Image (cartoon, rainbow, N blue to C red; front, side):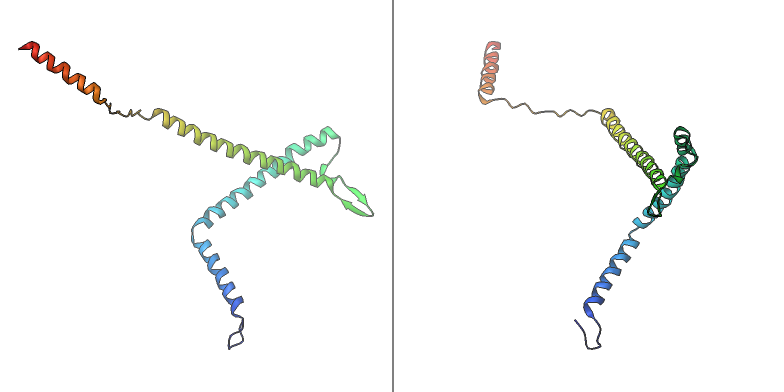
Length: 153
């Protein structure tokens, strides 16, 4: 839709809506958590990359007899297919995925353990149930009490 000034109103409304949503996202405070997680993730990736490149791959290279695993290539019609670098990236991914799985599993198990300990150490509160005496039993009890009173006289 075009207004009197020749502007596209629909596009402007969608753009305003998009930027309003982005502003709400930024100001909610979750962006700081996301930024911190990103920085820690980047540092973690650097550690894993070093583990793969400096420890694991040299051991694999020793076992396979290759001097540098990342230099494994296929020549296809004059083009280089660097499958050694790909294998290195896959190993790196698997280590990162395993580390994250182990960390998340540890956190979940710790939380479940703490909940179980709190539940077991909480004082047990037993509910006192009111005993409902049937009417015929009440009547018999009254008759018994009356008989006891008569014997005393």
